[in-house]
Amino acid sequence: MTDPTPADLPVTSQVAARALIDQLDASIVALSTVIDEETDLVRAGRLKAAAAMAARKQECSDVYVALMLRAQREVAALGRLAPVETQRIRKRHHLLQADLQINLAVLATAHQVAEDLMRAVAREVEGQRTPQTYGRPATAAARAYGGARGIALDRSL
Image (cartoon, rainbow, N blue to C red; front, side, top):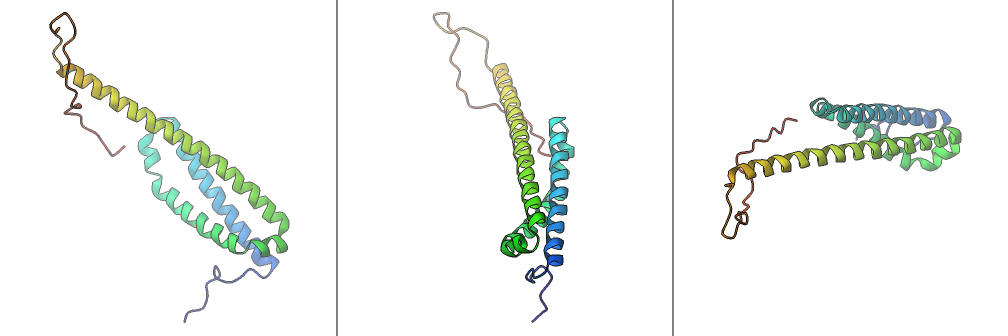
């Protein structure tokens, strides 16, 4: 059997409580910074640069989640041994949640815009394939919509 890692040991002192809170605080700052950068890139339309941040965002998220789970397991000890720092980290956590909501809204908007563009291109391509003639009593000929054909999609963005 191996020795427990520091992450497995219970928080039993003020030093250990503050160390865990400081680690969690640093992870929140790092994740928040990455999220803010990604949000700014998406808002600026630099989707390729934003997509390149995925690995860094995942790494920061993994560290944050691991520390947050540990903090949840030790919530009673943290509140008892470092109450001021615990309140500070709760506030920081709420600020991170607000950053995440903004980021998700920006990403959803960018996704919707991209989807709308693709639909507009598909309609335009389909319209060019349909003959511009009139049917019997001077009405536009009904067209069977089978979807646009011949549209290429670059998924690297």
